[in-house]
Length: 341
Image (cartoon, rainbow, N blue to C red; front, side, top):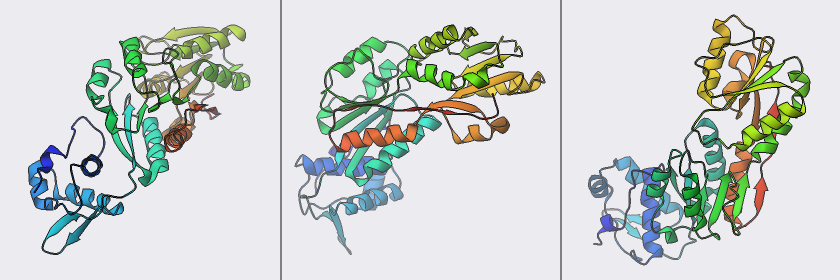
């Protein structure tokens, strides 16, 4: 029997469920000729013990392989490779900068659109250049597509240099399209400067009852500076007083002010401050929140949001993968007006 422990790779850094990592490893082993037709697979119990994972994980992995008609089982003999001439799924390396509610929307739409046509290895690098380097596999030849959300807190240009050296025919960028990444590759992205400017223009009538706009832009963050450029451009064009603040810790709320938050934690702190100061949201203080999520429909009778269409972003990225397209697709920005203005 083959030494499957040299073929099967369970990566603790990967967010990909272990059962999919296991099934993907066997598919890769077949593709590379390390596993052949009629080879006997380890029993569920033996592989569970060897890999230190649950029996349910092995069972799900073997069930996944059955979908491709790769393995069969014989009572009393176990599992064996029944077919090596199957349609290989597209192998995708997916690198997200962080996990969040809206990133989950992107992932779910991406995975659903790909369906059984792709095998995804999913990693989170937490906006950290060093983690990004660590999780980026040395052997990217295993993958048909490299899908990356390129947001970094530090060493951004070094990260972009690494991305620039990846095979462009495999590269798909999501969310951000840095100018320093050149060549012919696929991308689905936001136009951060234009998006916030035109979103605030759509809200101009609501904003007219306020005198000051403040954006809570966290210091030392991965958020694109283009957001501030668009914000400042709007305030200058329409003669609003404005301020850029990095946190709410020492902020004194003044009636007639609209706050724009990017981070969910800042939204929670802002609402708490407004309530504790006995001010009214949508009358004394206006609130605009980046990134639409279901909870914002109901928080304090509804929070006005400006947001890209995350579901569409995931769907379009998957379509670029499936079609092997090099197209650049700008995702529309949407304004949802609620009672917080």
